[in-house]
Image 1: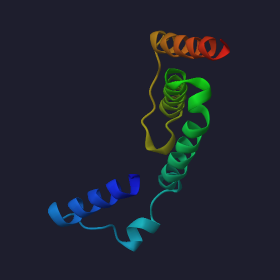
Image 2 (image 1 turned 180 degrees about the horizontal axis):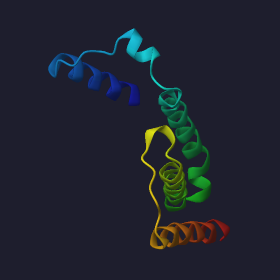
Image 3 (image 1 turned 90 degrees about the horizontal axis):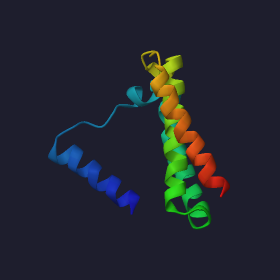
Length: 109
């Protein structure tokens, strides 16, 4: 199903909106981290299939939200992959900590 949606999007984008496909030079000059989205998407699908019944939908979504939160904190603090460096306030640290603690409590029950 996902492949069908991607192909429909490609057709609409290239024929309806008249956007050009990227050139071979543009594709080969993409940074290394631009290619990990496909692998991470496949990993996400496999994890959801394996753990959805065991953990439940709410816990599974909470795990991914916390993982995204931690990743965004690391990216903002370090400036990796082109992000601007940002300083975190104590409120942001507290909010992130509360989410992680809540998730740990949920998973341990």
